[in-house]
Image (cartoon, rainbow, N blue to C red; front, side, top):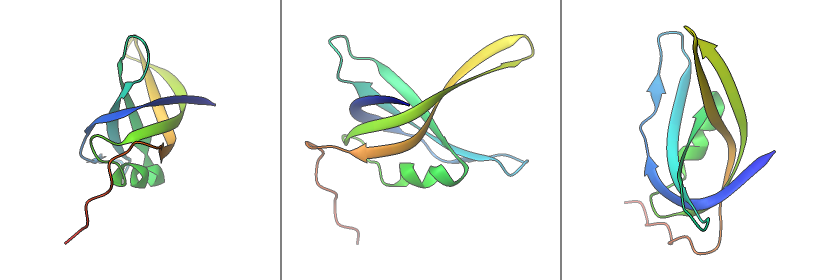
Length: 96
């Protein structure tokens, strides 16, 4: 189990593929001495986690590291399965 804390920088639109597979990605800026932008993806039923996030939220993300090879190229993905808002997040704006 891996966790990172940071501030939500970007929330991307959901992607759905011909196979029926869907994912949604978001980026957080870490709270390290040298902050980094880290992109996470949520797949299948976990896409709903991203719907609750807005830019500026302070979050703690729990994730797995996944790697694969495709056409002799290697890829690493950070697959989030939990994203909890933490103290300091701005209040949610009421929906109209």
